[in-house]
Image (tube, rainbow, N blue to C red):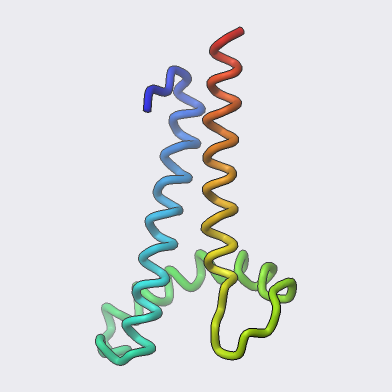
Length: 100
């Protein structure tokens, strides 16, 4: 993807990093839930804590609007789709501003 404006490039990079960290948050939470990795390890605790602090404020606002599906939490999926919509919108705005 070619981004001509440095501001849009920075926004796009931040969105991409946020997306990758969201995927890491999901994978870490699954690995801890299925006891694949030891949650008492200091390294795992630090990574899990940092990702939790990054995403939980946003996910906490999404969860009340989600239906109760038992133990399935779809708020992460909603956040992922929302981030992708924001990324698409940034690309669209940048493209339209470049056409002017």
